[in-house]
Length: 242
Ligand SMILES: *Cc1c(COP(=O)(O)O)cnc(C)c1O
Image (tube, rainbow, N blue to C red; front, side, top):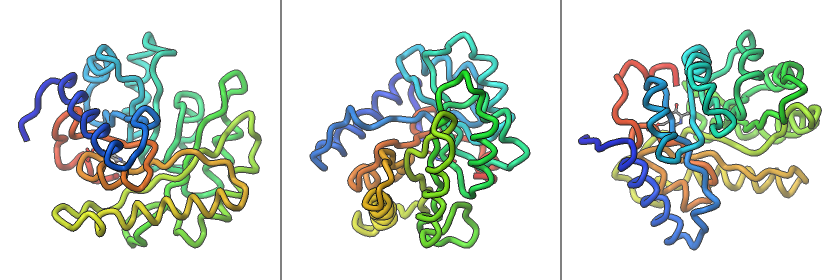
């Protein structure tokens, strides 16, 4: 893939988002573009910030903490989202440094984040990661267990954590008909609708990446997480833990 500058890449991704929203009759201003900066240096994040990007997604806790530290001068005009797996022994620094965690897949993690969120900060925003396609190798709560987990997380102290919605990483199906590509995104949207019907106040559907953002937006994604199309190709090995 031939990549332009971060600024022109961001413009192109925004054009894709606007086109997908237009064909779905949706307001593109209500979609958050999360620029996924994993494996890219703090300088690349600074470049994206300089052209107006404010929300960044990171996968690896230590790498992210180093970057957040290096870019502390950009606070509060920058927002950090953890989108990668979170082990319970890493929750404390995450609770202190991030604005969002999209990858909550069990109650223990949410409980620790609630206990460890510094009280002087606003509540940490949480999404539950759902293994929407029941892939054996994927992390995330199974759809059948998601409602119970959402109810338990929503009951944690509201001053510390706020359950905002659901996140999924559907397997890309390049070349498949759009209806096939949209099936997992639709399943996630329907799962969130079930939760809303049960009284949970959720407003975030985190789904869609560089190759499937159109399918995700057609099914109601409110947050797309885009790495490659913004920053360029990552070294292949860097995707292993995702
Ligand atoms: C890496 C990653 C992305 C971005 O993927 P691209 O295909 O590079 O856009 C989005 N979400 C998660 C959870 C990731 O790990």
